Image 1: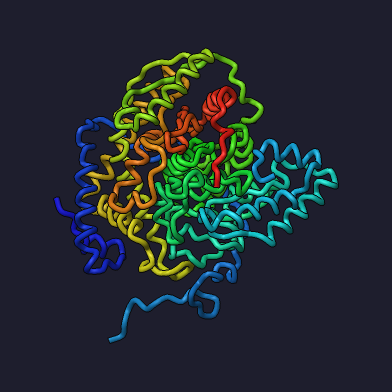
Image 2: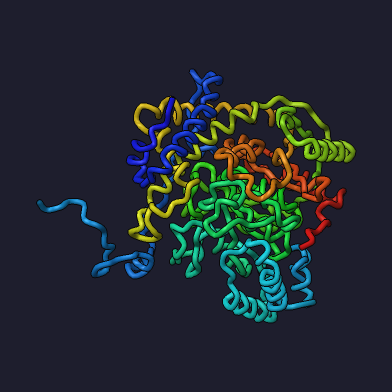
Length: 94
Length: 466
């Protein structure tokens, strides 16, 4: 099976240069071939492991604690406007 | 002074043989004199460290004592440090100044330790060489033509070069043990959940385990005691009490050590021989050696690759250049490869065949270890298939990390505890590491066995000549 780099790059929100396409595709196809050996292991009746130490339903008491101030939260933002993060427009007016 | 172990440094500070300012200055000078050769430290923290050392000397003069009061340490640069740049060695975070401390950092600060530098790593901790860092590769202090391993390569090299008294790293699968092995230092990978992940730049959240890199086993025990424990900010951190590891280093019973031949297949003969000799040493000291059969580690590589890439793609999705950091165009080659593979294995139509299969195989690997630990107390194996490889070794192989970590990935997948100790040197004078793997939350066992070995051998006394 060949790895479809352009399609996955779109899903992953990554820009891949044309000259990277070929190499990435061949590297990822090779990796896929390698990891396919898991098929050797029968897991028909095996449950999933999502948490290795067996913790379940971890909750905390519903107590409000202090967090970042608005100023601290914005410290690393490239662009802000009146105390908010400024983001690029998603919808455009025709 | 900078060459002292943590245990020795604590004693000397208590006896007032020297001050924390003197010790901190000695370590900072060592960084300044050696780091042009090594590139282990990305950010040197000088003025603030000296200021903190002065404060800790004042505290001590007032009779205040804390477990790590006045001890200078270095920290892998994927731990958030308040008002100090935290890059994860990626250009995406090249200018990121966190407004908060990681829990590990806070605990060390509360215990009196002094941060003097933030160390290099593979970008995002994606790798086993420190060669994929956007800040250039770190070099191995034993031979600067060789790699230090990774991803905590900066921390391992820094300790091997005596730039600090101890270091902190993080391991997802091998990132503490493997560089410790290549740089000839002790590296302890605690059980998943033993140490809080809060404030560590997330790589694979079901695997990430912060831990110490030190000059001796006792030093690792001392640091683990400080950084371990439940943290309300990390729901996966364990509520189990933290034992006093350092005062519990003498093994009280005869232990059984498991040895699996599959962990010696395709291992360099010098490495295999050194580890076999170490196993004989354990036998001489009265331990029982038992042959066991474990899953071939090659399955863990595939399993780890799927689970880790999936979690990477999810964790790195947050980097959009809006709230902090630069845009996604700044990701390097390795990060892009990992995000792409993870996105693929989680994508509609492939999820069942890859991710869902991998979390089932993960159960099989855990069961396999559980079966082994019903017969043995710990498992001994080489940490890595080879000693350090030359600079540039990662260039041709996009699976380099996985192959270098083949022997540590199975235990990481199962969330086990493990430690690397030096057990020999190659004909080129490069360190050889052995790992001792224990069950979950049995750090005492791996520390006891590692301590026993260290007490009866001299490998840890050898110093890299820079």
